[in-house]
Length: 283
Image (tube, rainbow, N blue to C red):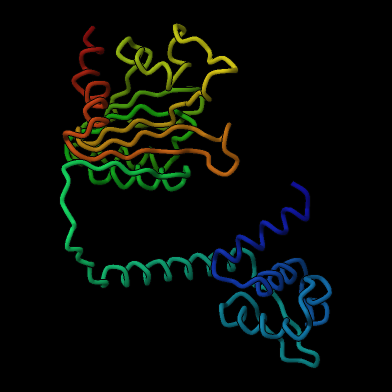
């Protein structure tokens, strides 16, 4: 990534934390200098000088810039560690405010709303899917079965699995992919070998698990690669697939199925229920 692209990405990221474009550009300009006047900031950031003062006032209010009231005024960005901590606290505060407000909103009632005994939802993006996965893990009561690509296992997922075992939840995990990428100590988690025969029917999802599955030809449909298959309490399923090879902006897609009689849940129970794992271990 060249310097210009890095700069643009940084400005965009700061805007995601609530700064406007001119404010973000002025802050980045100040971060590159020990201190600067409005004229110097304008020259570096390409922000009109008349708008620099407005941007600096906001940055000062946010605790990101200090001002020396000389003639002309001189401005200085706070240290990087202090700035990131300030942004984090502001972001968390806004999140808490949003959460509290959402919780106070009265639910809408639809006359034709009907209850269903099963649901299927889709979710895109590894970050969003990881958040949903960890939320479901925290809600598990009795058992968790997880077939997962080591590439998507991070410290938070490992911690959520271990925390579930501390609540008395049985956790059974089968790892797919490069085992060298898995470097977590989970003493209370039961690990199984996913290459056993009960997974041969998933060869189209995990071609690395079996040599019996032929590689897709150029004329066939785009192959899919399993990123995670999670079964919670035998009634909730998350099926995720890697898509970054075919989608530039989405690295993972998932389907979340809920309901004891849901077809996908029934299938997952047949494949990943702990008694299936136990049968393999005893074989």
